[in-house]
Length: 322
Image 1 (tube, rainbow, N blue to C red):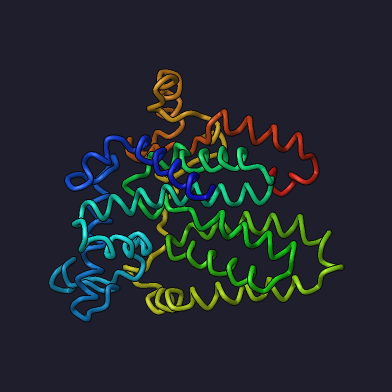
Image 2: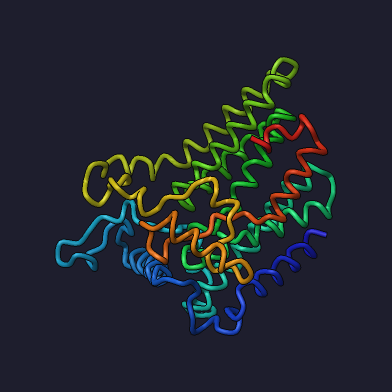
């Protein structure tokens, strides 16, 4: 069953990124030049490692002084997959195959989580399909570090198992997948922490007393994540305060803003509703460039199914409603 699901999600990835699969060796996907930045990232990491240099500093930018790349947007797991494939299929094809693999992994991770929660393979497949095809994800194909959110459902899957079973193995896996979330992109730790925090707040009061070993398993999960993330955290701390390690930029929220309404509003390039929604985006996101009016839109069908699930499950759906 799992193999069939993977094949189905691979077909969906090909269809939703068409005609990328016919141009694997000649084109990079996405609507901005950021794809070139991420391609350069992989090239630089490969060159640095092959010549014994650190990938966290390059003399090739701001030459001759060079610059630290400590807080640069490295999609590390995508870079790793690209470097592994590059020698076999070439640079462009390796980059694109790694991206397609990440899309498939997103769908499959959500499938595993939903199957564990519902026990229904059909509902789980639909959940994975929705998660893989989220409009925001498909609008960000030039940002592999944004679309690769497969680790968050896996973190939630094993966090839930840790709370339910109190097994140390589940705690180790929950911590590992949380660390992989951070290695994909620092900011992805924020939604992971929100999801995990809400779930723990709802689930622990009912389960803590009869199974105290949950506490040890959760501490183990936190310890694994902390140890795994310690090297990049220390690296950033060492560079903190320098111009190249400025993670918070004053005024950036003006050009990067979104709000709750955006999750309900189809994006301005919607094939059916663009005439209605484009003026709304131009009015309410006037400070954002055209290329940054990204759709946070979830999809009315997905929202309707989520509300139906909450209505049917009542109080057991409280964490997901949150």
